[in-house]
Amino acid sequence: MTEPGDSSPPEAAEPGPEGEVRASFFDHLTELRIRLVRALLGVAVGVAVVGWFADYIFRFIMRPVLASLPEGQQTLNYTSYLEPFLVYLKVALYVGLFLAAPWVLYQLWIFIAPGLYKKEKKVVIPFVATGTLLFYCGVAFTYYAVMPYAFPALAAIAGPDMKPLLTMREQLTLVLAMMLGFGVVFEIPVIIAFLAMIGLVTPEFLSKYRRHAIIVNVIIAAIITPTGDPFNLAIMAIPMIVFYEVGILVARVVGKKRKADEAAAES
Image (tube, rainbow, N blue to C red):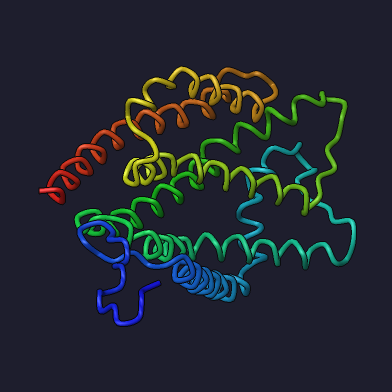
């Protein structure tokens, strides 16, 4: 507090990158709430758009599952009259989220952008476009390259004398989990670039723990492919390892640019 008659100016707020004034904690909370609300509104619009086509979308994404079933048994079952409605609702929610992914990423970028340098802010379009494209590529990779081989391998575990009785709800949960998982895996370079941009990771740190990352990736792939088939294991593990290496290269580029920006700001 200042003494009576003291005309000295109040203490200035802490400056941010390149001289901007940092927002208070409550300002950050308010901004986060705004971004979350707008992101959810975008998801709601996506859900409303795909809601009319949920049954057609469900049949499309179930094709690899049905193709893995024996001839004459290529059908899915439901255990209650409410299950198809809940399944189609879940399809609409997830596909709506997929469609709204660019908008959600953009809202995330707007939230973290004030803490970045001006040159870093200019990569908003590449950030959103690359993140969205990689996520969609991960989903497509799952549908066309993973599921056609993974489901027959999983079905072979039971043996030829066993008949599958698959339900709509359980298979949709499995398929969506696989698509979402590989979508996140394909986002590894973007995630690493973001962490390197804000200084949380360095290429030296990532290179140091490369072997640990490879082991973890292979373990995860082995869990997803319980048959132990080397081909299916490679389909799962190779993308994760490749994207980790790509992330290291991206971190090197981002790290050099960040150091240059910090040196320019200090001068």
